[in-house]
Image (cartoon, rainbow, N blue to C red; front, side, top):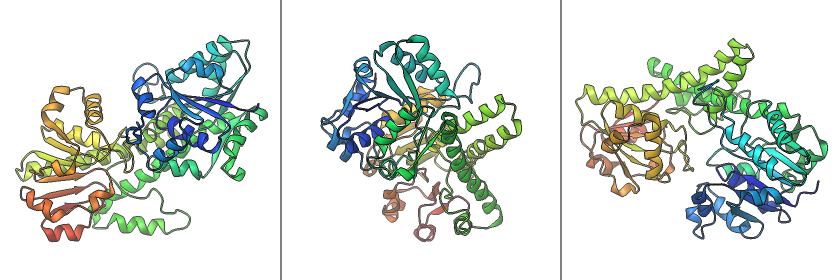
Length: 458
């Protein structure tokens, strides 16, 4: 099939940037990104590119080039499904909060709803592409729904998992390590290969069967998270023995068999994918009776929770044992730098632990909005009244008064490295403590100013 018209259902962190690059690189293809969220689509269509709903370095430039030419954002979902030759499903697959598999399995209700809508609207043959992260054999379920609700149209299913790291998503799209396309119909596979090969070398495009493609995404994220939890587990050992985790990490990473990627210790990993995908992998293993396999992968989550809880506990114990003002200035809310995504951010859990200990917090992040911060807290602790009482959010670093004894750095934003820490120290109550949850600051310099510096693994 020659693809002239693409529809992507879901204008989020995956759908928006991915379709923007596909449109930029394939001027002959019309790309429509659709979503039922009117505010989100309005933001994507804003003339002010700073108002795009997603912050990613380089995204606004690509959107500005392609939008209005062959890239469009719309709430007219049925219309664009009907017109499309190829449809990407790029909707959320959160962890189930109730029912069978609660707390582990992926909730596929949005994916299934998309499949049902595609089936009911379609009048011509379609290639349907899984872009969302899904469990193995989800494509089988999608095909069953499509065929159940529409027996007159031929649907071909492909799996095309995303491997984007937020903060570097545009680079990952421009120069991907690999593009995986899984399917059982060579013609459909070739149609998607041609789209990607307009800018991706064909040697970097790997074609597989559907099940291998679906499992590759889950296991890739599990391997990356495994490295982070491994180095974080060693950070606690370093604290007890006098070793320095930064030196240990460097020594490990210099081994060519291991490499240095994802060996940076931190307060914990976050983001929408790692925890969700590992829990999903654990659930799949358990349902197949692979208990030891499930227990192995679940340990990654256990270590991650332990890391952020022990970081919180250090702050609480420092305040209590020194009879300090029960207030903390938090710097950073996004789960990593160069993104405004705060999903599963360690900052949420650390802040919640502090709130439970009746410690008030001031929060500053250069990209995450106040509304999102309160949404995150209200979602996790369901205590809107206490959150409003104990939490203050500043959208400008200059508005932070630093009238506290404790600063906690929870996101590795570059700007934090360049602050005038001498001036900040003068504003703070004494003794002054910095809990560096990312090990980004110069310990010796801060201690020479007068700070008590507490990093991770050192």
